[in-house]
Image 1 (cartoon, rainbow, N blue to C red):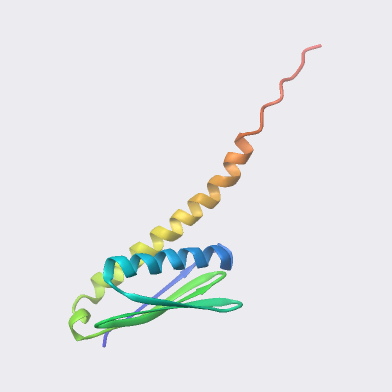
Image 2: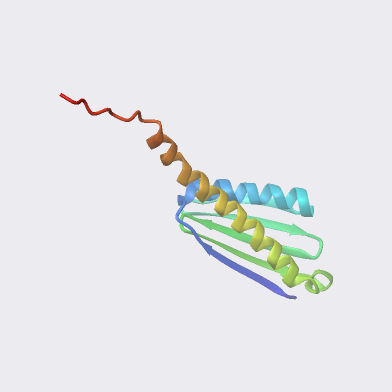
Length: 120
């Protein structure tokens, strides 16, 4: 069976990483008819996913994601394509989280009115 292994570092913390993992699980359930279950832990969570011809897990930690998947014979022929889609999807979710995290402080800072200097 072909294996897929993906590791992504992040600086989101566990709470935000969980949200991304849940989004990812919802997307693969909808798009690829996967069956996902989440096992929550104190320092990390595990998202287990399965469907005919594929099973694996996504480890969700405060500073990284680790995905391991095993593909059956038929899906194994498409392992590079499948791996690319998983990477693209996970990277997109991470980029969206980083972008929204970066925007929040900027909006808050921009909302402060500028002080006018008085000319005495």
